[in-house]
Amino acid sequence: MSNTPNYSKILEKEIQGLEESGTVPRLLLHSCCAPCSSYVLEYLREYFNITVFYYNPNITAGEEYAYRLAEEKRLIEAYNRQVETQDFEGMNSTQRARKIEILEAPYDPENYLEAVKGYEDCPEGGDRCGICFEMRLRKTAQAALEGGYDCFTTTLTISPLKNAARLNEIGERVGAEYGIPFLPSDFKKKNGYKRSIELSREFDLYRQNFCGCAFSKRDAQSRQ
Image (cartoon, rainbow, N blue to C red):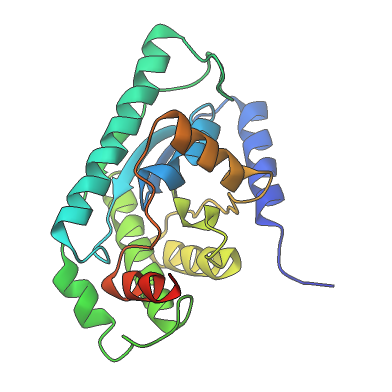
């Protein structure tokens, strides 16, 4: 039997506690792209005041980075219109849904490339990805502390290709360093990943077949 915590159930208990206490924390949500954030935002906007933190220096192609950022903004605008009009038909949200903000971090692919130097040939999910996860989560924790947020987390756990236990371990560790709680998650569970595909189709979101870096794109093209 696995000793890995059930992060999905842990999050459910956290949310149950928030509902019982009537508190609505400020959450800084690191997002890798609009498709991955689609379900996460739909789910969490009833329980948190969310600011999406867009920090993805691993997307080394500037045009790709700009396109993904534009899609993230377009999705947030669509969700915010639903809140304004109270039109949640077909959505897993209610009138408790709150508007979402976005915070753009500086785009610094040079720092990413320097951080993963020597790991270019690592397989997807290997040490290079671990460096990338920590780089992005550390930046998110720092921004959460500076912005006075109550907690932070990431959309990355929605991907079937991402190790949720690894992401949660990194998040909890850097959160402890900065003194800002990390919200545990495994968003792919309970049909979260399936729902993200449905929402991507509904909002006609650009859904890429690689994580973002030139190395993952290379591997995706090789598989094809």
